[in-house]
Image (cartoon, rainbow, N blue to C red; front, top):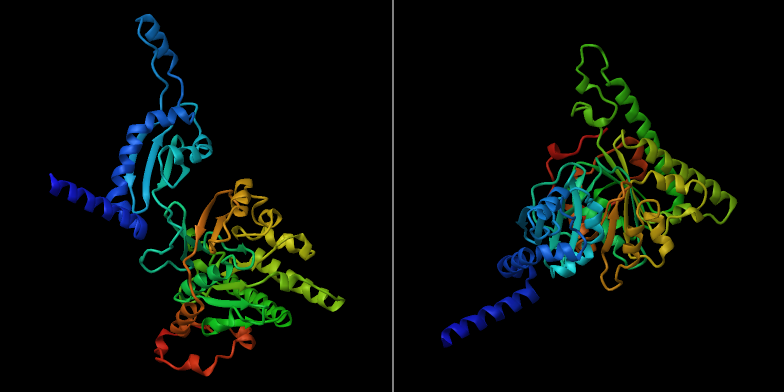
Length: 452
């Protein structure tokens, strides 16, 4: 008996230590079992308490009255599957007639408390089927992106979502994005993570950093072009627009719309061109858009109008030419001047870190989802890097990027400096590298990215 008690105490102590130091291990060893038992035993009562049941069918009530039997109970959604994951459980439900996926979204907070889990997110899989993704612990407390296969071109993992899934920045699906956040909110860390992931891909990185280059110039080894002031930014954006025009000329020449060409091979963008003709895609990163849009004199107003016009043109026409925008700033509203809201309308992806006021959150999500605005305002200042990510479809989720130091980002860019392509229009803006960056292993010439 003493040995049994000692064993139980050791197991209990192990569980407490794992829950404190290694929540993922605790969940995989103990948490899944406890949570599964809790959900299955409480399921009917929780569905009834949360108002997620429907009355029995009329024929059942009539049959009960005819046979003088008790009236049947309200019916809960049918469980199709309960699947454990490394961070929680996935519960798939078949809705009853009259139920809607929005009912489960509205009740997600009550379900979280009732099942004693950390978070519950509901989403519709198909008509009549809802999936509840439940996390057993705070996955955003210590973010570690899982090691995975090499990323697809222009689709990179940058953060972890609150439901335990990896959040990807997919430029093919969401070409242009806005990233806002107050000082010390983690916006720059998110940008470093994004650049570090893009550095290993065959893409051209172009940057505008009007904070005298302190954020992007340390990463210059991987950048095709950089500008550190508004005057240089005007020329850089004009050159990028010229490059876009040359790319469209190539697409027009290679569309191959003759009768003998299959429909699948006719192209209107760079991705259907033959690989040996396809221009390298370009990602333009603007570190602080307000510095480009502010003007204090007539000459600065003319410069500002040129900058905004170029950005709007790239946002409207750049996707087919393989040019993608990543615009960062603390605020992004109409007070920045004419044309800025037109630019914002082109930015499908929205990411909001902690903001200082509700107005700033409205700039990102006011035209998309009021719930996302509320979530952005509620981000804790003691947890930098936490953000709300969404798009123009109205869907959103909380995310947090792993802490990427400037040294880690610099090392990643230096290691992949040989991938930096050369673009003739952008050659005048190629950054000059410090001598220490050039010291290291020389990459083979065959690995050089093709110029266009």
